[in-house]
Length: 153
Image 1 (cartoon, rainbow, N blue to C red):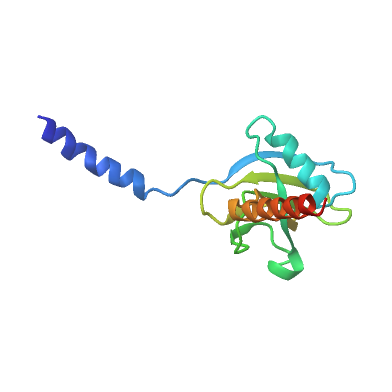
Image 2 (cartoon, rainbow, N blue to C red):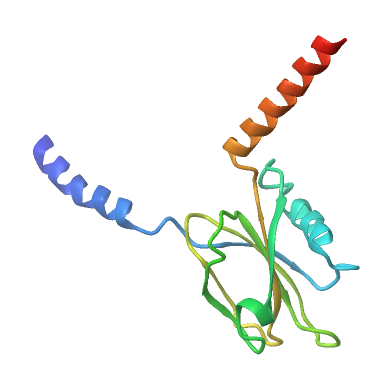
């Protein structure tokens, strides 16, 4: 009897492992970010994440529409900045157009596919968490500075 359960459970396990890692999580939207910049977008994103995660949000890269996707684009399909990122803020509308900012959290290794938006995509800003190797190098550098300072005094 146990063999039958095992035989039935095995395909379910294999299918669940083959399933995609997940989709983007929609975190929120706003129509008012004064003096929009990566810094103000980062603060807004951190305020959205305060209930979900204690991770620190760090600016990675901003992509302007004219450089990386069609200026009249109403959506992003399979947009991959080819870097590590955890969150994205998509700005909709340009100049006097109505629009806003939309925040998304990455679940797995998926690329950014969002929209369609009525007023088109202005820019996308990606945020992430410092990688462990970067933090290790920073820590070793600070430790080395501390040792040198202590030896000199």
